[in-house]
Structures are given as structure tokens and as C-alpha cells.
Length: 291
Image 1 (tube, helix red, strand yellow):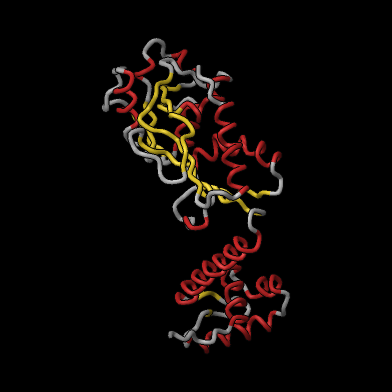
Image 2 (cartoon, one colour; image 1 turned 90 degrees about the horizontal axis):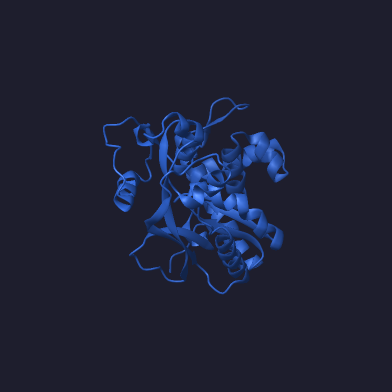
């Protein structure tokens, strides 16, 4: 049987706090000990591992390359321990981890999230919007899937995505009827959306030779359209409020795309996930109006 080394836990905690804050005094304040105690813990840990973790002046030390690596690893390890304690100790109370695309979070979920927190104030919804969040800690994931793909285990359909060309009213008025001649706004995360829209609608007239502006995320592309930088192809659920309020126009309407949105539960049967999925589907139903 493998035997673990006896680890200096207090020294590890002191060093992790110092590495995270970048200074020993802040670590001492967080841990409720003196600056000297943190310094002694760090020195003890350096002797334990056999390498320097901080360097430079005693009053303004800097992490060494080894210290940076070790500090990052310790922070991740302590985060995992805290998550495990939360999961086993707090059960269905406390944090509800939800994963989704950043644009969906910014333009759809967050503006409506007050409805869930008002109904279930004991849950603290924590959003993860990229793949760096450990999937083992996610309670609910909102996914975008090809229409022909089957739904994963413990998941259900939310809605079918609809696409449309959107343009700021002032820009459309200046360029009627040749809206398609305006600069095209594209998104790196979905580079084929213009070809998809042309195929779905049969609308041609804006070739690849036209002026194009490319943005990293959909919320940036939509913001560019709102600020009259060009025309964009956007999902209805991301621009519904802007179209309804007249901030954007959709001269060709909206059509079903090749994608669907679905919600997946990672630990089914828990009240907090049941409550969130039920609220989510109600919010989708309330927002299902089409132009």
C-alpha cells in the first residue's frame, strides 16, 4: 500500500495564501496570524521541498518560477477540497453551478436570473462560461447541439435555435433597399453562420469579397450591430429584446437553424437542480414569442 508523506499542512496553507495574494502581509491578515508566522511557514516549506519559493527583498518578495507553479497547484487543490466539502456537507443548499456559453449567459440567462433567485433565494447560482471549470463540479449545463444529434443522458430539449439578419435602424434606413451591401459582422466562434443563413433562407447578394469585421464572441458581434458597424446573423433568443424595442431590425425575419439548445443535469434527483431546470423551462416558454 502506498504511504503518503506527512505534509506540513499549515505551511502549505500559509504559502498558498501568500502566493495568491503576492505578499506575506495579506496572507497573514487572511489567516489571522502574524507576518513573521507566515514567513516562518514559507521558510519551513522551502526546506521541506528543497527549493526556494520566494526570492528578492524580504519586504517585497517575489515568487520564483517553482513558486508560481506550486502556488497555482495548491490553489487548485484547496479549491477542489472546498468544493468536495460543500458537496458532501451542504447537500442541496448553497451553490448551484451552471455551465453555459458566455454570450448566452450575458444576453439571456443573467437578465432573467433574478426570477430564479427571487423564487429560490437559498441558492447561490455560480456561472461557468468556459471549459476551464472542472466538469465534475457542474450541476447543470446548458448546451448547443446539432439538430440531428441525440440528446446526452439526463438532458432535455429547451428550444430550437432561430437565426436572422439584424441591423441597426439608422444603418438600414441609410442603405435601403441594399442592406446586404453593408459590412458583414462575423464571429470567430461560429465562422460558418453566414453560409448557414444563406442556405436556410436562399438569400444571396453578400459575397465573401464584401467588407467584413470579425469579433471573438457573439456578444461583441451583436454589440457591433447595435452600434451601426454592419449587419450580423444572430440567434433570435440573443436579440429578441433589441428587436422588440426597435434597437435592431430583422428585415428577412428568422428561420430555424441547424442547432438546438438543451439542458443536462449531472446529478439528477437533487431538489436544487430540479428547481433550476423547472424555472429554466418556464423562462424559455415565456420567451418563446417570435416576430
